[in-house]
Image 1 (tube, rainbow over the protein chains, first blue to last red):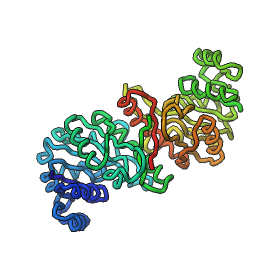
Image 2: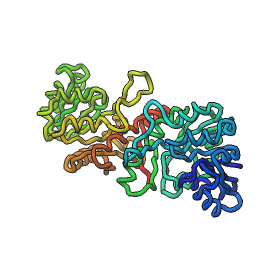
Image 3: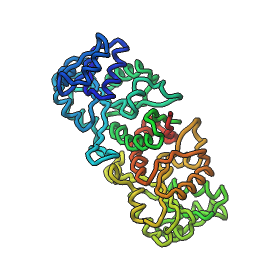
Image 4: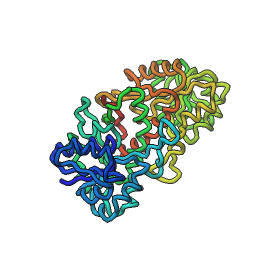
Amino acid sequence: MRIGILGTGVVGQTIGTRLVQLGHDVKLGSRTATNEKATKWVNGAGDHGTQGTFADAGVFGEIVFNCTGGMVSLDALNQAGAESLKGKVLVDVSNPLDFSHGAPPTLSVCNTDSIGEQIQRAFPETRVVKALNTMTAALMVNPAAIPGDHDVFLCGNDADAKSRVIELLRWFGWPGVLDLGDITGARGMEMILPIWLRLMGTLKTPMFNFHIAR
Amino acid sequence: MRIGILGTGVVGQTIGTRLVQLGHDVKLGSRTATNEKATKWVNGAGDHGTQGTFADAGVFGEIVFNCTGGMVSLDALNQAGAESLKGKVLVDVSNPLDFSHGAPPTLSVCNTDSIGEQIQRAFPETRVVKALNTMTAALMVNPAAIPGDHDVFLCGNDADAKSRVIELLRWFGWPGVLDLGDITGARGMEMILPIWLRLMGTLKTPMFNFHIAR
């Protein structure tokens, strides 16, 4: 499958590498076509990894991942373009972390809205599925990296889009997901970040994840 | 030990009942000294359960639990009175759930502040420990009600106060806690509520809890 990834940070690169390993064709998109981090990634990714602008990645992908920071996601997606994202599944992995007031970051949107909802409203013909934003990148693509049961959450308005993301998460090693319903579930998924950050401080590692014991 | 509980809802009653079973003396405090829910609870609680006003419960308790709704907590605590709460450990179990705009509730404070912090600021001579707000009442006092490992979080500015709450949580059956640091950790602990509510909708039961797999 052809997959476009918006964002060249650790999250975008980690997901891109895993998808290439799984035999997919991945284009890493950035503000510029010659982003250095993306070039370095492409050099290590073999024949199935390429780079380009956000627009290039948006056109390229049958499925598109938003791995940009939440505060710049709408801008990146606008550069990708509504026309090229039309009808496609967009996996939104972003978090609205605002570091402008120092650490710890606050959320630039929360409580009555979320980045996931903002994206769905701005791109009504794109099928947004929020997923994977509640854990560190290494775990997203390799849940076996920590022992025992732990969970990945997902939400979105389109049942078929969610099914496709569930299949994709299965490729990554996730046996099942916790489906939180429509895209308004993104509020809870994003608002879990403050305790995640606090836990990282307590545990002194990002290698942990939420498990819903029941 | 003498324990005051502010709030006569399910949380206050459940914690009160468990503490009475453990041999403690509990006074359930309410806006009025003759609250009907509290009277009913007292009738079932044996010799060690009594009721009174918020002020009565505040004076009575060596440790005080805030089990009122987050939106009315400061008012209830003001009725309890800064003088009677001075130097005491206050276990804040509240959540700032605002149902005034319908369901699901939003949070009346979040992101840059929390109820836990508001209480600590308003009562600087009281030692506030946020705990237990991230699960349903039945689990607070009986973690064995669901199988497997799962976690209770705690935060506060006073190390000795946290030690005392950790001991109290051990009485309830919690072998350990995840200490999230100072009282600003209450932001994350309260902001987990939206996903908790969403999970309750997905799982169709409140009998679940967060476990931090690592």
